[in-house]
Length: 440
Image (cartoon, rainbow, N blue to C red; front, side, top):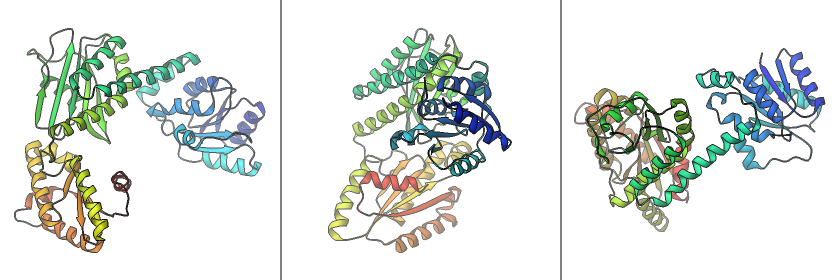
């Protein structure tokens, strides 16, 4: 049986839903507006919430977006009830985080069936340290909620605005440091931006700055995983280790692209919360800086494997699309994913694994096509012109067989290889990458 919170400014609907659910063995709490509903949510900790769309103080969509901003509530079921004249914009319906919308004007039998079926689904409240804190100190006033939302949007805006200085990475790091000095009290600030082969570490502060290797070690203790071999130290440092630190890891599609570290914050919990709020915008900015660095270098090839990088492959694909259309030749894209890569980096080290990847790319170029790109840490794209799917699959099967046989490719047996073939259907490059990503 579930714990269900009912939030509606109509006493009739509150009573109706409460009786329906309790009759079927569920435990319920009710609230008459959005603010009271939030306070009940943080004390009652329901598995499911059923709430009205239009309510005093806080409507159903705003309520839901606030609840979904906490990762610990991702498995709570949320149903929003709408009236006869109320319509939800499809964009906000999708972004609200609600699981389902139900019109109050539906037949009574349909409402009861839909509500009971929804509540019976495997929704649950997940206990965590974050939840424990929220349970002890729930939000008491609407101003607390608005302040939190405003703080989030303000920090995001301030950081994303720094993209206008994309030509000067050092200046951006200084400005992020300056922003954090206005938000927090701490000694030193460290930021690392990483790619497959390189890491760039910046630091600013009030005291002697710690060694970059000490900074990396601390970040690795927090779960940062580095694939790079070279570290560019963009600051002067003393021969000392870090003090107390709070670390926030940055990623792009679950791949590490850096971290931010605050040394000796006055209140670590506050520092951690602010860094978490800034995570999305800093991750986007770091990814943009990496891409700008790639463009500025003028390099076409990935330094580790020798495959095309994600910038240069776009130009190659554009030319092949044009040739394919003019020559009426089929154009195929083969996504190759290496699932065991992280395990190899941990067990065998970066030098061994990178050497293995280079051998693998050489084999791809010899066996499939000379148009091979590394599009993420463990993912490669092979472009085949003039081959149909059957021919491409035969080539892939031969490649996989070669990787499993003894001989010059013997070490490649350690790679767990998955492939997917996509036929070009006159889409744009972005649409192709979307299709390839959606098949993971």
